[in-house]
Length: 96
Image (cartoon, rainbow, N blue to C red; front, top):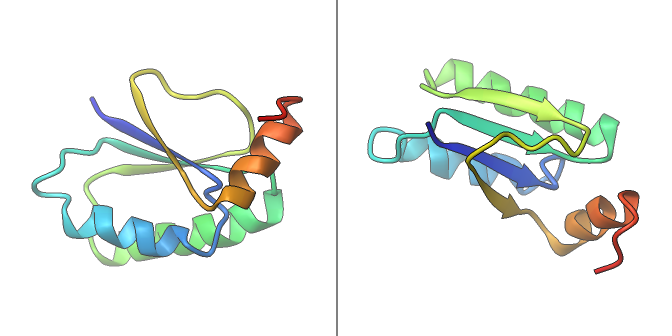
């Protein structure tokens, strides 16, 4: 089972990233796409938009929206724009 977590999933870049997964879903066996962000409003807006696209195009994988640090096991983690990563780490007390 392959799960991908996108840190900064509330970014406006996320739908474009999602399109890539959608276009390759037959050759890239993805089971779950986790969109993770600390900004509840942005995650809700972008996440629901991505879910609508997924439904319209018959995505074969589940989309999970998450505000917390609980990462799914056996996950490939992708980072959205740098500012998303900075918000994510600073919200958890990590200054990287």
